Image (tube, rainbow, N blue to C red):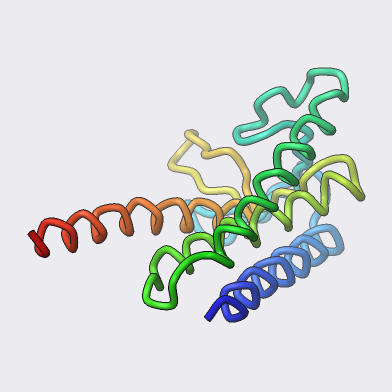
Length: 159
C-alpha cells in the first residue's frame, strides 16, 4: 500500500504542475478570467507562504519556506513508509499533503515563487488565490483530522 500512497503524491504533483503550466500559458498576470459569479482564474505569484505571508520580506523567505517544505516532505515520506495498510484515511491524507508540498517546493526552487491561479469570491470578498497543491494540502489536513476522530472511536470502542 505504501507505493500506492507515493503514487497518489506523484499524481498530485503532476496535476499541480500541469495546471500551473496551463495557467501560465493562458492567463495574463493579475488579470481575472471569470468562470462563474464566485470563481475566477487569476494568475498570481506568491513569494511567501499561505495567504502571501511574508511575501514582501526581501527574498530570504524563499529559502526558509523551501527548507521547511523539504524537511516536512522527508518526514511525510518516512511516515507514509511506516503506516499500516489498514490506515487508509491517514495514508491518503499524508499522500495529499506530500504531493502538495512537493508541488509548491518545485515552484519555489525553480521559479522563486509559487504559481497560484484559483480565485474564489463572494461579491467583493476574495479568498486568496491558490493552486492544486494548496487544495491537496488542505484536503490532506482535513483527512488527518478525520483520521484522529476515527482512531479515537476505534480505541474507545475497543475498551
